[in-house]
Image (cartoon, rainbow, N blue to C red; front, side, top):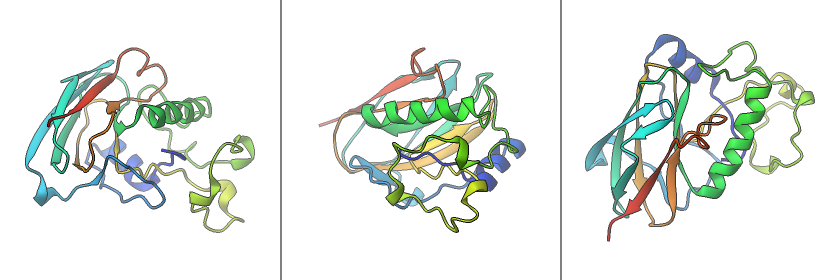
Length: 196
Protein backbone atom coordinates (compact mmCIF):
# COMPACT_ATOMS: atom_id res chain seq x y z
CA UNK A 1 0.00 0.00 0.00
CA UNK A 2 2.71 2.36 -0.88
CA UNK A 3 1.84 5.26 -1.00
CA UNK A 4 -1.37 5.69 0.99
CA UNK A 5 -3.72 8.37 -0.27
CA UNK A 6 -7.30 9.26 0.69
CA UNK A 7 -10.08 10.11 -1.80
CA UNK A 8 -11.18 13.31 -0.16
CA UNK A 9 -14.68 13.55 -1.56
CA UNK A 10 -15.68 9.93 -0.98
CA UNK A 11 -13.92 9.27 2.31
CA UNK A 12 -14.78 12.59 3.97
CA UNK A 13 -18.29 12.48 2.57
CA UNK A 14 -18.82 8.96 3.88
CA UNK A 15 -17.38 9.82 7.29
CA UNK A 16 -19.59 12.90 7.63
CA UNK A 17 -22.80 11.51 6.14
CA UNK A 18 -22.55 7.95 7.40
CA UNK A 19 -23.28 6.71 3.88
CA UNK A 20 -21.11 4.07 2.25
CA UNK A 21 -18.33 5.42 0.07
CA UNK A 22 -17.84 3.88 -3.36
CA UNK A 23 -15.17 1.29 -4.01
CA UNK A 24 -12.21 2.51 -6.04
CA UNK A 25 -9.97 0.86 -8.58
CA UNK A 26 -6.35 1.58 -7.85
CA UNK A 27 -3.88 2.18 -10.63
CA UNK A 28 -0.29 1.26 -9.89
CA UNK A 29 -1.01 -1.17 -7.07
CA UNK A 30 -0.47 -4.89 -7.45
CA UNK A 31 -2.10 -7.41 -5.12
CA UNK A 32 -0.65 -10.85 -5.85
CA UNK A 33 -3.32 -12.49 -3.67
CA UNK A 34 -6.39 -10.95 -5.28
CA UNK A 35 -8.31 -8.09 -6.83
CA UNK A 36 -11.53 -6.14 -6.34
CA UNK A 37 -14.45 -8.44 -7.03
CA UNK A 38 -17.72 -7.91 -8.82
CA UNK A 39 -20.70 -7.94 -6.44
CA UNK A 40 -22.65 -10.27 -8.75
CA UNK A 41 -19.78 -12.81 -8.54
CA UNK A 42 -19.76 -13.03 -4.72
CA UNK A 43 -20.47 -16.58 -3.59
CA UNK A 44 -21.00 -15.63 0.06
CA UNK A 45 -21.13 -12.76 2.52
CA UNK A 46 -18.97 -12.48 5.63
CA UNK A 47 -19.97 -9.98 8.31
CA UNK A 48 -17.07 -8.52 10.27
CA UNK A 49 -17.45 -6.42 13.41
CA UNK A 50 -14.66 -3.90 14.01
CA UNK A 51 -14.50 -3.21 17.74
CA UNK A 52 -11.90 -1.42 19.89
CA UNK A 53 -9.28 -3.14 19.09
CA UNK A 54 -10.33 -6.51 17.76
CA UNK A 55 -12.33 -8.12 14.97
CA UNK A 56 -15.22 -10.58 15.21
CA UNK A 57 -14.47 -13.02 13.69
CA UNK A 58 -10.69 -12.91 14.03
CA UNK A 59 -10.11 -15.53 11.31
CA UNK A 60 -11.78 -16.39 8.02
CA UNK A 61 -11.31 -19.18 5.52
CA UNK A 62 -11.45 -18.59 1.76
CA UNK A 63 -10.68 -20.55 -1.38
CA UNK A 64 -8.41 -19.41 -4.19
CA UNK A 65 -10.71 -18.09 -6.93
CA UNK A 66 -13.53 -17.25 -4.49
CA UNK A 67 -15.21 -13.84 -4.45
CA UNK A 68 -16.42 -12.71 -1.02
CA UNK A 69 -18.68 -9.81 -0.07
CA UNK A 70 -17.62 -8.32 3.28
CA UNK A 71 -20.12 -6.35 5.36
CA UNK A 72 -18.04 -4.30 7.80
CA UNK A 73 -19.44 -2.54 10.88
CA UNK A 74 -17.41 -0.33 13.20
CA UNK A 75 -19.04 -0.86 16.61
CA UNK A 76 -16.14 0.82 18.40
CA UNK A 77 -15.54 4.37 19.55
CA UNK A 78 -12.50 4.90 17.30
CA UNK A 79 -11.73 5.19 13.58
CA UNK A 80 -10.81 1.72 12.26
CA UNK A 81 -9.94 0.11 8.97
CA UNK A 82 -10.32 -3.31 7.41
CA UNK A 83 -7.33 -3.90 5.16
CA UNK A 84 -6.41 -7.17 3.43
CA UNK A 85 -2.73 -7.47 2.59
CA UNK A 86 0.56 -9.21 3.21
CA UNK A 87 2.32 -8.79 6.55
CA UNK A 88 5.09 -6.73 4.93
CA UNK A 89 2.64 -4.34 3.25
CA UNK A 90 0.73 -3.90 6.51
CA UNK A 91 4.01 -2.90 8.21
CA UNK A 92 4.61 -0.23 5.54
CA UNK A 93 1.01 0.96 5.77
CA UNK A 94 1.33 1.42 9.55
CA UNK A 95 4.34 3.72 9.08
CA UNK A 96 2.34 5.90 6.71
CA UNK A 97 -0.64 6.00 9.06
CA UNK A 98 1.60 7.20 11.92
CA UNK A 99 2.84 10.02 9.69
CA UNK A 100 -0.73 10.99 8.78
CA UNK A 101 -1.70 10.99 12.46
CA UNK A 102 1.31 13.15 13.35
CA UNK A 103 0.31 15.61 10.62
CA UNK A 104 -3.20 15.82 12.08
CA UNK A 105 -4.92 14.35 9.02
CA UNK A 106 -6.29 11.49 11.08
CA UNK A 107 -7.58 11.66 14.63
CA UNK A 108 -8.47 8.72 16.87
CA UNK A 109 -12.13 9.09 15.86
CA UNK A 110 -12.08 10.52 12.35
CA UNK A 111 -10.54 12.43 9.52
CA UNK A 112 -9.76 16.15 9.64
CA UNK A 113 -10.98 17.44 6.24
CA UNK A 114 -9.06 20.71 6.55
CA UNK A 115 -5.73 18.96 7.12
CA UNK A 116 -6.32 16.47 4.31
CA UNK A 117 -4.92 19.08 1.92
CA UNK A 118 -1.34 17.98 1.98
CA UNK A 119 1.66 20.32 2.06
CA UNK A 120 4.38 18.17 0.47
CA UNK A 121 7.09 20.48 1.75
CA UNK A 122 6.52 19.07 5.26
CA UNK A 123 6.57 15.39 4.27
CA UNK A 124 9.54 13.07 4.07
CA UNK A 125 8.76 11.35 0.78
CA UNK A 126 12.29 10.07 0.14
CA UNK A 127 11.26 6.44 0.69
CA UNK A 128 8.22 6.56 -1.60
CA UNK A 129 8.12 5.18 -5.13
CA UNK A 130 7.04 8.29 -7.02
CA UNK A 131 6.85 6.42 -10.33
CA UNK A 132 3.49 4.96 -9.23
CA UNK A 133 2.05 8.27 -8.02
CA UNK A 134 -0.30 10.45 -10.04
CA UNK A 135 0.87 13.85 -8.88
CA UNK A 136 -1.13 15.68 -11.54
CA UNK A 137 -0.03 19.25 -12.08
CA UNK A 138 3.22 19.57 -10.10
CA UNK A 139 2.53 23.28 -9.59
CA UNK A 140 -0.58 22.32 -7.65
CA UNK A 141 0.83 19.21 -5.91
CA UNK A 142 1.79 21.23 -2.82
CA UNK A 143 -1.90 21.38 -1.92
CA UNK A 144 -2.96 18.05 -3.40
CA UNK A 145 -5.65 16.31 -1.32
CA UNK A 146 -4.63 12.88 -0.08
CA UNK A 147 -6.59 9.93 -1.40
CA UNK A 148 -6.90 6.41 -0.08
CA UNK A 149 -7.75 4.57 -3.25
CA UNK A 150 -6.55 1.10 -2.33
CA UNK A 151 -9.47 -1.23 -3.09
CA UNK A 152 -8.25 -3.73 -0.45
CA UNK A 153 -8.85 -1.25 2.39
CA UNK A 154 -11.99 0.27 3.89
CA UNK A 155 -11.84 2.93 6.61
CA UNK A 156 -14.85 3.25 8.91
CA UNK A 157 -15.84 5.99 11.33
CA UNK A 158 -17.44 4.94 14.65
CA UNK A 159 -20.90 3.49 13.98
CA UNK A 160 -20.37 3.24 10.23
CA UNK A 161 -21.22 0.16 8.12
CA UNK A 162 -19.66 -0.33 4.68
CA UNK A 163 -19.03 -3.12 2.23
CA UNK A 164 -16.17 -4.49 0.17
CA UNK A 165 -16.08 -7.25 -2.45
CA UNK A 166 -12.79 -9.07 -2.92
CA UNK A 167 -11.74 -11.92 -5.22
CA UNK A 168 -8.99 -14.08 -3.69
CA UNK A 169 -6.98 -15.23 -6.70
CA UNK A 170 -3.94 -16.89 -5.13
CA UNK A 171 -3.34 -18.70 -1.85
CA UNK A 172 -0.57 -16.99 0.11
CA UNK A 173 0.10 -15.60 3.59
CA UNK A 174 -2.19 -12.60 4.10
CA UNK A 175 -4.19 -11.12 6.94
CA UNK A 176 -6.77 -8.43 7.58
CA UNK A 177 -5.75 -5.64 9.90
CA UNK A 178 -6.37 -2.14 11.20
CA UNK A 179 -3.27 -0.04 10.66
CA UNK A 180 -4.36 2.97 12.71
CA UNK A 181 -1.49 3.77 15.11
CA UNK A 182 -1.44 1.27 17.98
CA UNK A 183 -4.42 -0.80 16.80
CA UNK A 184 -2.48 -3.61 15.10
CA UNK A 185 -0.10 -3.78 18.06
CA UNK A 186 -3.14 -4.07 20.39
CA UNK A 187 -4.31 -7.15 18.49
CA UNK A 188 -6.55 -5.74 15.77
CA UNK A 189 -5.66 -8.25 13.09
CA UNK A 190 -7.11 -11.46 11.76
CA UNK A 191 -5.99 -14.55 9.87
CA UNK A 192 -7.06 -15.39 6.35
CA UNK A 193 -6.68 -19.12 5.79
CA UNK A 194 -6.93 -20.66 2.33
CA UNK A 195 -8.99 -23.86 2.27
CA UNK A 196 -7.68 -26.63 0.06
